[in-house]
Amino acid sequence: MPHFEDDQQGDSKVLTKTKTRTKLARPRLYKVLLHNDDFTPREFVVVVLQHVFHMTESDASRLMLYVHKNGVGVVGLYPFSVAETKVAEVGSLAQQAEVPLLCTIEPDTGDGKDGDGGDDGDDGGDVN
Ligand code: TYC
Image (cartoon, rainbow, N blue to C red; front, side, top):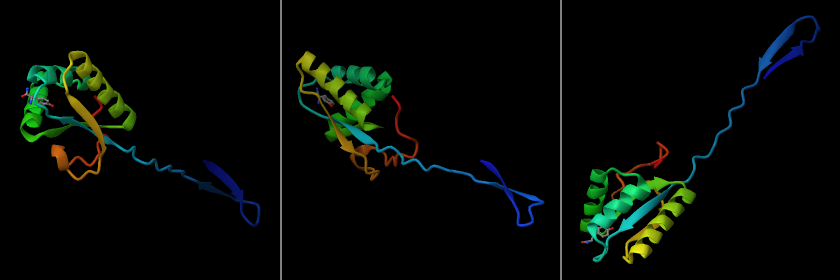
């Protein structure tokens, strides 16, 4: 904000400008993990990923197969409230269909474990 100050003699003016830069903490992100089981039909998993996480059919199929082979995979990184809602949506769809499909939340450490590709959260994560 511009601010005029009198100098000692009172005849000239000095303009000083103060810039305020507020540093905002980066919001903490949480991984949504998808777990394999032996009972949920593959096609159901793909449809859930498309519906809840707005994935294309080919991305959903690729992730479903990854989880089928590796036991667990990261669906995406989200702020806590979004992650919580998505996990609840998956749980609700699984319950309606009477399948044991499981999605969980884990704080993101940016260590690249669980097949998340080492995303450090710099891009703000997936906004789906
Ligand atoms: N393993 C399941 C099957 O063979 C498919 C599956 C994939 C289930 C991913 C859950 O998160 C999952 N029908």
